[in-house]
Length: 213
Image 1 (cartoon, helix red, strand yellow):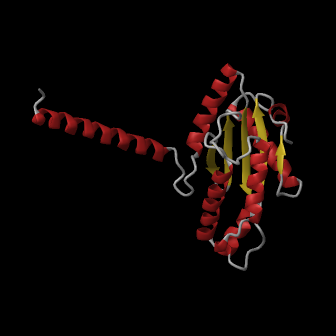
Image 2 (tube, one colour):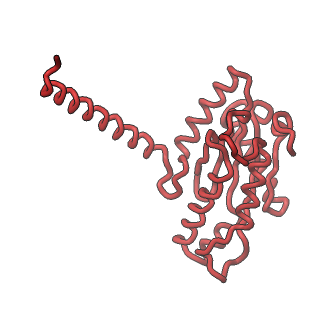
Image 3 (cartoon, one colour):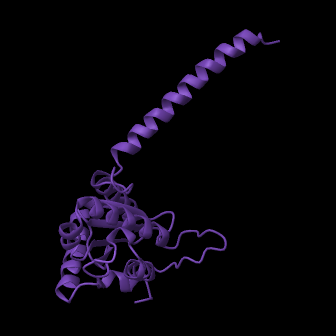
């Protein structure tokens, strides 16, 4: 028969290590999280994308990234101040998270520039979910949500509705390395800006793995 005092010692020892493991988990997560928006940060994005492409190459799977920013974000910052600009960025991430799937990774990679990594695009969906499985449709849904959202922090003096411009690039068709894939998405983003903004351009890879466009 086990001595109760001995069980107490073991329980205290176990609780100590559980607490320590949780503390280490929180520290690791904080190191890879953007403190302003709650999205993953650039450090996480770089590591995750590299790991994704390595695994995707072994398993012959596509990986798509959406690179986007908020159109004319500087105008909003200049007119309403940085506190309002920060709230716009936080709200943008909140809207985006309502459109993507649980396995998709939302990352802030600098300023008002964000990236979403879509890996395992045919992965499981929650029962009863109305979320689309098409990456292109997810991007379009998010674009529309931003356009129609009423950002109350802007008040009645907003310089105009918010909009995003972006580029969708897919491994391996649009790029085989992280830098190539990100470069392809960036070029498509620039094309979207040049075309008048409020647009999402996509590379040839999106057509190969997604029949929605």
